[in-house]
Length: 113
Image 1 (cartoon, rainbow, N blue to C red):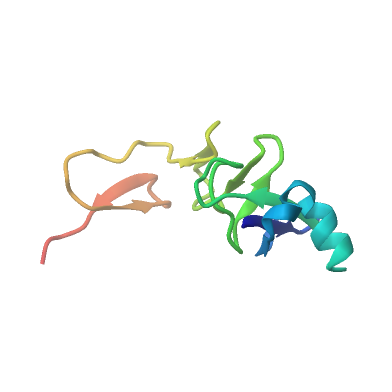
Image 2: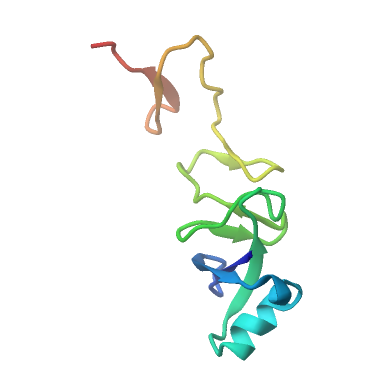
């Protein structure tokens, strides 16, 4: 079975539907026309080998990268070429658990209980 995500005019992922294997090659036409659902449909994959990652409602389609991406988590974060949001300061790699603080543009360690 193939999976196709419906994309809004603003490139929001609205839903993901399954298409029979024999219709995979024409998923857009099958969903929009044959099933009369209309809309724009793009193939996605559980194996992450089509458009970077499996699409889900609430995600976005980035046309320039041809990838499904998560929404931007913070205004200061930038999107890299793999469709992953990167903070302006790398998270420390010392084994502690951190949270991003947008106001201070820094990582804050969680206190152990």
